[in-house]
Amino acid sequence: MKNQQLSAVVEVIETRSVQMKSKFLHSTSLSKAIIELEAVGGEYKYVGIVGDHKHDSTSSFWLNWFEKITGWKIRILDSLLTNDALLLIDKIQKILYFRRDLLRLSITQFMSLLKQIADTIINDTPAAIQRLQECVTMWSSNLPYVNSHYQTITVKKTTNGLLLPLSFKLSADDFYVSLITYNSEILLRTTNYCMSAAVNTIFSLTAIEVMIRFDGVYLEIQLPKEIREALIDMETILLTVKRLDY
Image 1 (tube, one colour):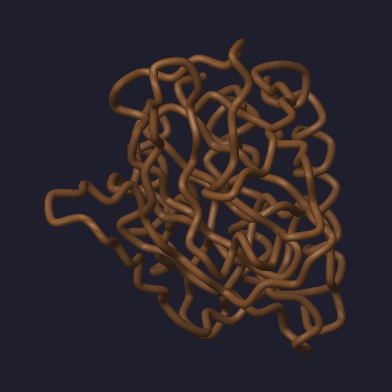
Image 2 (image 1 turned 180 degrees about the vertical axis):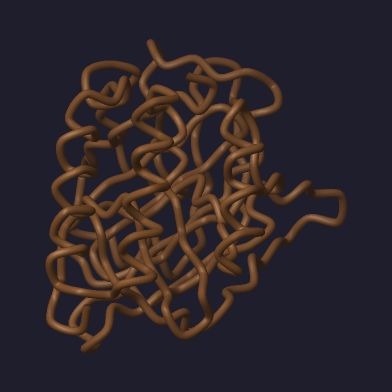
């Protein structure tokens, strides 16, 4: 696998866990685990959010079964900062990182995927990795999230953070926001939404819980001073928004 750096399937080494900081006494952090993963060869790094629950849906039984017969662990990534990777493989720790989107495959596709993964980790040949890459790429093009459940909104940068458009509505349980920045990417995670953007600024890896302020008319995501200063030359930011309940 060493020389294979693939967009949908990537071999990685888990480098570290990232602690989510919070300024609030009674917060309920949305991200129980944030991990930084480095691709073999060190050319790319990935930052992912592992949710509270390990497995859910009808795939749970088969994932647990796969762990028992292979000895590998499976972790589900609820969010991954902007890139195309859907399946990340850590051979050293024997961990497979599934993006949650893969659980939307049909049961026949999902079983075929597990069979192909088993072939890849047992045989560990370039041909096996290539077959796995082709399967994931083909199936991902038909996943529901590719065609729908996404929208884009333009937010205005203010002295305190990001002002959401009036047309964008949030519920009361969306007012805590997990904010992650890394390289040129921003990820904002609420209970029901995941919002991301690529900007013309390089950030260090930051994970902090912030709040949304409501002034009676507008909703404003409060940003830490260092993030606001990094975005000083930007007037607006285009966010890609995904509903998490789809």
